[in-house]
Image (cartoon, rainbow, N blue to C red; front, side, top):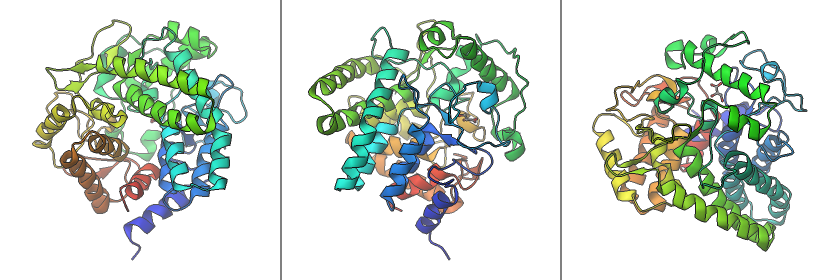
Length: 416
Ligand code: DGY
């Protein structure tokens, strides 16, 4: 029988479409931004050449202004909605026009560590300017006022599409669409595990707002009825800036390093402003009302991944508390929240990629016991259920799509 690590490598190979990897067959038939970053790190544990290629293929979709899109449509497929015709972006390859949590510089940094050779340095030297441009895009397009917090304009950009965190902010988004919604996901996966029809109406309405804004960042920012500071995106970006700063020292100029360091200082201070002492967690903010969103989810632990250690003990305490009502950590929603749904996508299930970042964060911030527990739970789930898209925190059951690339990558990153 194939051992689990061999099976993980097989999943990555099977989901390879000739240089890039699909998240899973059929349900997600294109290249996704943050999926590919984790996949590159997973490949780096056994095939660094393939890891570099994953990044290079994603960057084929990068826009001139630096945007790294959420999806790159390398090859046609009828298995997914919304496809390129809904986005209406004429590029080669076609892409969507929004982004996703920026794990990419962190991934490239890690691939280089696994491939500390002259060839690896050459690959990195070619990629570094693209990463630099993508971080400049985040600052210019999503934080033009220099607050230190970037705005997210679509729940798909947070990667945590239907998290209860966005429920109230989404109330502002009309449910009307000009586009006919022809979902494919619910023919691949039980609809009870997926976002609801009304969520999709709002998701597509937002796409239409941005299409009408001509995909121009300033107009999108002004026109979007959904604008939030997501803890996850901001923490992941801060971590990516730290990794980019190390790369800039080797592949960039002193002026670029100074520019990145200045952004880091601003972001560290701003991220701390999202801490909520009473709730013992970092909370997202609605950037239209200016109000804090009183929702505790797995993203609330991610500042640890960026080395924000000040509240590490309190966060370990919060998670310890959650652990009393679930079988495994980390549920995507506080299990004590009335909106917790253990089976529905980002409203409760455990996601291996978030767990890996949370475990890394606790370790980086000196909370070894909690780091070990989260990593151990993640390994336990995958060992028992395989490379599922996500897991029920109450039973440990694997749900959503099967043979998922990023779950396989996390198994390898956790030591195989
Ligand atoms: C989807 O279509 O479910 C994806 O999460 C969008 O990125």
